[in-house]
Image 1: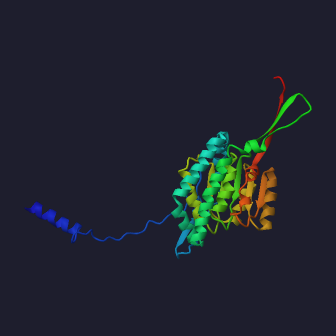
Image 2: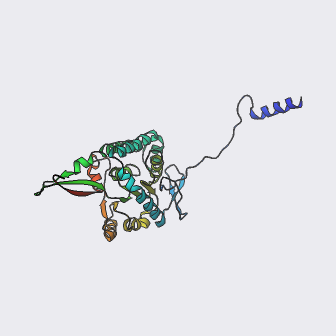
Image 3: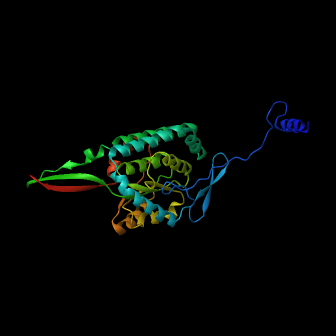
Length: 307
């Protein structure tokens, strides 16, 4: 009898008039971390900066340090040879897989782009263009060598071939005004050519860059191929430009002083520097294979005839 009474009492607590009791809970807020070697550590400095969102919320974003840059370059160097050694077809499949995964998470990215100030229409347009751009460069992975390679006429009994090879490790200072499309437009041609990269995301619109790292983590991209940092451009620009184990640096900026700084620091170990400002990333002319060529080297081979 006592046992029956206990069961009845417990049931009354669980259910009132057949309905589950109301409970209160705290929302699990997202922590925006950096992305190094396929993992999501916090910056080693422990610093962050507050980012005010359009919806009134404030999120904390990691302030990456010089050591984060060094760690990223180390893992990017380790990953580069294997990534460049993959066939163009395999790199193409992986870029297409990134596009697939980005498409399946479209609502999240549209919401984050809106949180950073874009309208719904602008966010949808940017997300669609980002997916399409990944697909575009996926199609070029196994074709650019035929476009940019040549068989050269020579005056001796030799075959002479010029072929394209990846430069190596590239640091990228992503566009400030385009949190997703600008970042993808900078990164996709770099990795399509067999390079690895370290990306400094937009300081004003970093949320979609960090979420894009989550897409990469589930898209068959080998660890270390793409590393994404958040933080202040004025603090990290010099470190990204003068690191001696970096082969090239890409800067998107309208500030000519930043162009001059990058070019001077890049000259210290004769790394290639590409400094530009693109006003409209939706422009069709910004989607072309010559963006892949910017971070390729041409290797010429001589081979005697008859051997």
